[in-house]
Length: 392
Image (cartoon, rainbow, N blue to C red; front, top):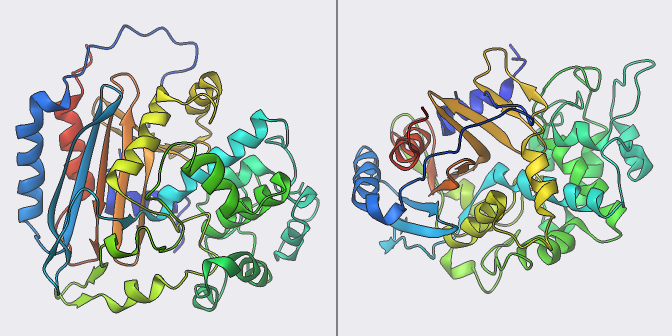
């Protein structure tokens, strides 16, 4: 049975989701100052070590952003269990759907430059969208903002998905176009939230056309390089290849599969703008620092960045989670966190921040599956509770 908010089933696996957010014009009391991560580093280390002890297979690397910098980071376990290679803060992991935040930032940049509008129909730049089946009679065309907020009505993946999950990164757009004829509408555009990976792939291809530069080249130039993310890429390259953690799938019987993750390093078909990025805790921290207003303004004007995080487009029906342009909002007790999580074969990641205290937490893990007893999302919330002063 399909659920209306399929995203939250994923969030439950990777993070304890639980969204409310104050309006743009609401008055708020000044937030109490958050403690520097170094002041509670021992407590953070204990939280992570305790969580990792529950399933100390593979590795986890954790970073804490505080005071506009990566204030604390530590790796636990093995990047490669077979060869006993310990993980370090330089270890490279895949971050899955956190990639969507970079695609969304590309959209925000192009809107700021006047090259596109949020309300532009996708077909204006990417007419191949009309290969998608089952368009509702009389319904208006999908817009860029609908793709970016998962309100396009497109199904999550194309039919016969496996046929479109192979191929090098250089061929991803060709694979996407081939998959469109096996993609369908599930809902009329703009009527409800429905998480769509292929929708974000379409968004990346569309933005590349609008920019007059391939999606990959654009993001590498205008985001990775602009933020100094030298160890971040869409595929293994000479700089990061030797530092990539081996990914493991753990089944309910504790059997390990690394072959699936190894194979996916050769390419994931159309899943590039929605889930291809490799990075380190240090590089991803630079992105979170940017999201917290740390600049540079040349990447996106501060006022446009701040306004984007006030733009919550949808929420689930118990207000435990929501979605904006490329970001998730999670709520647990008094914590309201912005960011995204992600998972691909053998890897799981979280990168979230609390706006008032300007703190962030990153978790990167090279093991996922039914048999993984390390609850990285729960651990992340425990760390935030040490960092974020209680609201009064």
